[in-house]
Length: 84
Image (cartoon, rainbow, N blue to C red; front, side, top):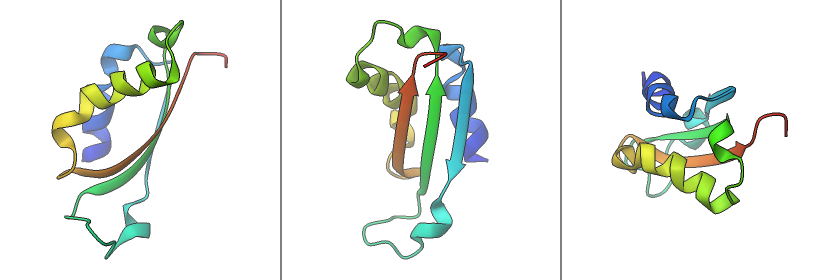
């Protein structure tokens, strides 16, 4: 299951919150979709403290980049510090 793969790939961030929402069903037949899923993730990690939004997103994308675009077609990321 791709959600478990995402969860295990992001484990290095020692997340305090990790929510993964699979919205693939909303995008069936979407132009350009090669069958990969559409996911929204909310990630809260102490590793994000002092990082810009772009740096946080790069950390998440870096962990998942080999899954894009075949397994993950679209990824929406909300990356925050804990207690934010």
